[in-house]
Each structure stands twice: as C-alpha cells, then as structure tokens.
Length: 285
Length: 258
Image 1: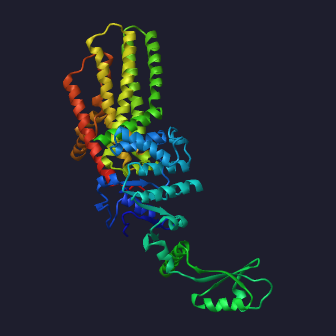
Image 2 (image 1 turned 90 degrees about the vertical axis):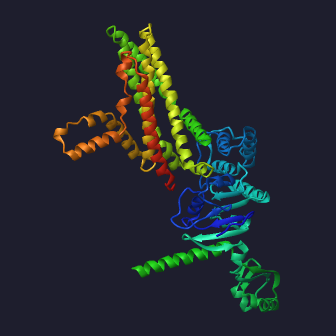
Image 3 (image 1 turned 60 degrees about the vertical axis):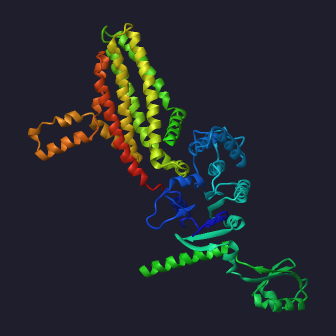
C-alpha cells in the first residue's frame, strides 16, 4: 500500500481489522514481526522523520493537569519551536479547532469531543508534511465532525498529505482521494472510492408517477410511495422498461444509475471474510 | 538532551499540580511534634530525637514517593496512553525515560531539600549554638536523596516490564534486602556450602547497598563526615543508577505499546 504525496487517504475497516495496529506500527509505538514501511522516503525507525509527521491517536488522552495551551506549548517545545513561534502557533491551533476560549482550562475538565479537538491541534501544531489521524471523527458531534472535515480539506489545500482511519464510510467517501480497505488484517482493496464501487454497478433506477390502476407486469417489481414508483432494472433492459411504463400511462420523473455505495462494497468484503472464517472453522472441526 | 529536560520539567510540574509536595505539611507536623516531645524529655538528647525523627520522616516520605510515583512514571503513561502522542514526536524512548526519571528526582530534590531545611531549623530551635558537625544533617539529607534516586531507577526498571503492583513489590523488596547487604556478606561461612557462600557474596555485590547511605547516627550526634565518603557514595549512586537506567532503556526500547 502506498500513500501518494498531497492526497487524502482513508484507511477503512471494521473494528479489529488492524487499522490502529497499522498506524501504531508506522508511528513506531509497536514493532513489526515482519515486513517494512517507509514514511517520506525514510524507514519508520528514523526518529528525525517524526519532525514532519503529525499524529492523532485513537481516543486521545493527554496530561489532564495541563491546560490545552500548556499542552500545545509543551509539544511545541519538543519540536524546537522558538518562544515567539510557540505563542503564535498555539493560539492559531486553538482557534482552528474552536478552543480559543477554553485554552486556559485544565484538560481534566474537557469532554471527549474537546480532547479530540486538542488531539487534532497537537497533530498539526508543527506544520507537518504528513498527518496521520486515527479515527479523527470519533466522539465528535455533527458540528465537530464538520470542523474536522474542514481541517482535513484545508490541510490538503496547503499541500499536506493526510492519512486517516475511520469506520464512518460516508466521511471516507466524502473526503478521500483514495481509500484502502482492510478486513481481518489483510488489505482487500486500494483505490478511489468511485473506482472501488464502480465495479459493483447494480443497474438503473427509474422514478415515475402513475395515477390510477395499471396491469403492467413491471409494476409488480416497483416500490410505491403515494403516486410515485421506484423501479430498478438491469442496464440493458432500460429502454424496454421505459417503453412499457409509458404505454401504461406512467410519467417518467428521472432515470439514474444505481451504484453500490462504499458501504455496500465494504460490507460485501466483511461478509465474505466472515463466511471464509466460518468455513475454515467448520473444516477444522 | 534538551528533550530530556523538557520531559523532566513537565514531570516536575505534574508532581506539583498533583499536590505531591503537600507531604511537606505532614513533615512540618512531624517536626513540630518532635520539638514538643524533645522539649518534654531530658536535656541533652533533644537534638538526637529531632534528627532521628526528622531524617526517618524524610526517608520514609521520600521512599513512598519514589516507589509509588516512580512505578507510575511509565505505567500510568501507558495505561492512559498519554505517551502515544509524545512518542510520535521526535522524542526517543530513552529521552522520555530519562526525562521521567529526571523529573521525579528533581521533585525529590526539592522535597528533601525543603524538609532538610525544616529539620535544620528545628535543630537550631533546640540547640541555638552551632558547631561544625551540625552540618552533617545536610549530608544525611543528601544521602537520602541519592538513595531515593536509586529507588526511582529501580521502580522505573521494574515498571518497564511488569505490572505496577509487582513493580512496587519488587522495588520495595530490593530496598529491604538492600538494607541488609552487609549482613549478607557477613553470613557465617561455616554453616553454608561453598556454592551458597559464593552465591550470597555475589548477590551482596549485585544488590544496591542502601545501608551505605544511612548516616543518621552521625547526624544525630553532629559527627562530621569525610569528603571522600561523600564522593564515594555519590559515585556509587551515579554508577548504579546508570546501570539500572540502561537496563530500563533496553527493556522499554523494545516494548510494544498496546
């Protein structure tokens, strides 16, 4: 798996798939039994490379005896920022994550969502080239999630590379240039969300109105909501179906391509993995 | 080394904000009680009572801090996962470990120094005329601090590879055995096999000799301490701490943080 410079890369998978483990390996918090990884062309064991990386741990927890401003100042010192830079960056980060009024409150009084925001702030504090975020939307309300999404998009606009893990597929679909899908510790697919789901195009959907009764056989397959019907047909049957519906007196409102969502693609992989695991279990018995 | 200092100062700040230094109030109460008791017993041994009580209190309070906070230096950070964000920054694991060690021994230095001054003031209170040997109480306090530094290093080592409870037990166990190293060396050879004699001898040199740092009797009787003895104890503590911390770094550098 390779993350390209300047892209937003989503790392998606169910709980226990190995997303956080992979990220911890990249951050040298745990060590690999085999294999290798490189970040910014340097081996992950090179600690100096960490100057150019920002990392948000999953469900972050920080020194609760410090205020948010003190914590950010502490990390800024670790990054060798000068006193003037520290003051400027700390205030800027607090503003970006919406904590400028809470910067002088001890972290022990922060909610989970506020800690997540502090985590985001410390990850981008030193203006890194690469930002690795482990479940950045976790624990956030809709406003917080929107803000994190905005920060991620802003980072991309600034030319940064962002890699984040998530199990909220709509976020990945909305933000990512490419995603990697991991299930059961194995990488099952890498590509743009549209590319991955295109392989699973499911046909065409016709939305039409029909007043009164009709005996057209296609109507039996349609889903009705008031006078509106929704009918899904294979792509090659589209024109035939439209002819039949018009003959029955239907008014065609729209025709659209039915594409599998990333969620469906993802669920298919998860179910296949579970079925395989079950089959192995049965054969072992 | 700059990052070691940054981590150390933060560890010191943690101790201050977690009210670790509040124990000084307890010590002040002990000193007041000692002065009252000393005033009520026969003349001539007030200084001995106060010095013995004071130094024992400094040692005991310091030991409790060194063992319990020392064990928590790394294990608490791992449990709460506060070190994840830190180790993802350009901080080497040895820098983190030395910083935590430095922070706690700085806390203990401030703590023991404050208590030492308090003890000295109590001694002046019962004995207004000073003589040369009265300064020994400060050497005794310094030796207690050296001993505590060693205990912190051991607590840190054990907490790098075992649970906090076991780390506390191991550290306390080694401290207690370390008080009797001389006795271990002096065990009667006649009642033991040659192998056992060799083993106890070897063990007595491997274990830290904490009794070396106890000069309570000299301090209580204002007997001066030789400079060479101070240098020898300082060197012993420095070398022992270096060895133990090196072992801790080796263990911690390979540890997976779950």
